[in-house]
Amino acid sequence: MYLIIDTDTPFTDDNGRDIQPLLTLASEHGGRVQVIEDDHCLVPLLKKCQPAGRPDDAVQVKYEYTHHLFPELLEALKGMATPVMP
Image 1 (cartoon, helix red, strand yellow):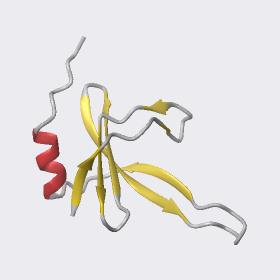
Image 2 (cartoon, helix red, strand yellow; image 1 turned 60 degrees about the horizontal axis):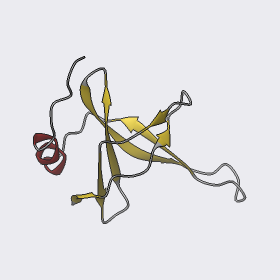
Image 3 (cartoon, one colour; image 1 turned 135 degrees about the horizontal axis):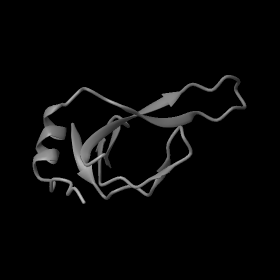
């Protein structure tokens, strides 16, 4: 089950941009979702772990767009303000 937790610190996307999450959800199994704003839309990103290539390599964590809107995420999104267009 995913729960809303304290919002994470900014992370870097694949294009090298620093992204500040608006909302963070985490599950007891290590799952994590960041909700960001992009073009005045709320966008959920799901944590994906890339396996290490060799035993010495660190596991790479990145966030990818998700189309899976599970119940806890939908409830969290309902409570968020709609992004304002300038």
